[in-house]
Length: 337
Image 1 (cartoon, rainbow, N blue to C red):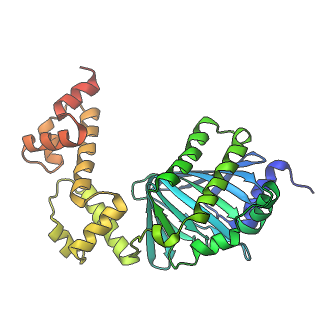
Image 2: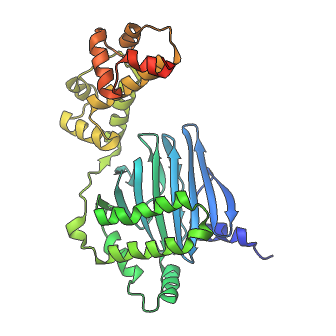
Image 3: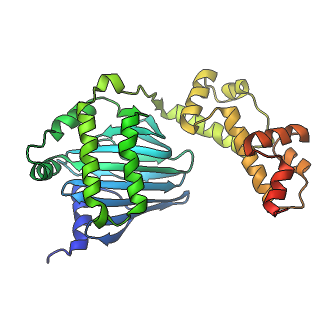
C-alpha cells in the first residue's frame, strides 16, 4: 500500500533516526510535522519542515525542566546538524557522565552520534532552531539545484565533527544575522509552502559561511562538567530556590557540597546564567512580586520575612533593584491605583 503524501515525511524522519516513546507526532502536511514531548516537568514542541530532500529545519520550544532524549541514528546514517540557541539553556550528556551546556547566541555543529540521554533545561525554557542534513541525500539535492555546488558536505562534516566535543561558535555578528532570519520568517510566514525557497537560500548561506570559516580561530573553548558536578550544582539551585528564608554563604555551600568555591561559582553561572547571589536575589524578588499580586492583605513586612529579609527597608531596596519600583508601588500599579 502506498504512503499518503502526509505520511512520507514521518517515514523519512523515522528512516534517519528513532525519537522514542515520549514523542507524539502531529502531521501538518507533506512538508511539515509537529512533535510534542511531555513529562511531569512540562511540555515541549518541535516543528519540523522539510525544505529539500535530505534537508530539514526544526524549531524547538521547550517549557520543561528536563527531557529524556531517545534520539538515536539508524545504522549507517551520516548526518550534519547545526543547532542554534536563541533563548534559554540546554544541558546535554555528550559522553557518558560528561555534560556540555549551550546557551543564548551559541551555535553548535554536531553529527548526532551522541544525542541519547537526559537533556536538562535549567531555566525551564529553551527556544532554538536546528538545521538537519542527511549528508548523501542533501548533497544530491544541492548538486541538482545549484549546478556546480561548491561545498562537499562530507568534508564539511569532517571539518567540524572530528573533535571529541561538539564544535561551538559564540556571538558571531554575521552568523547571528543569518540565523535571525530563520526566526523572523518562522513568525511571519509559518506556512512552509510560502517560505520554502527562502529557507533554502538561508541554509545555503549558512553552509557557505561555515565552509570558509577557519575553525581554530573561532572555536569556543567551552567547559565540560562531569555528572557529579552537575548533580551538586542542581542540588545547590534546589536549596537556594526552596529555602528562601535561609541565608547561606558561598563558603558554606562549598563546604556543604564538597566542591571548591571557584568551580562552584563558575559552573553555576555557566548553567543558570548568573552568579549564585544574584540568581537567588532575582528569584526571591520574583516570588515576592507574585505574593504582592496574589494577596493584597499580606503585609509587605511579612513578605520581606518570607524572603529572608528582617529589615523591610533592605527588602524594599533589593526589590526595587530587580523590579524597578518599590514593593508598595508595584502593588499599587498592579491594582491599578
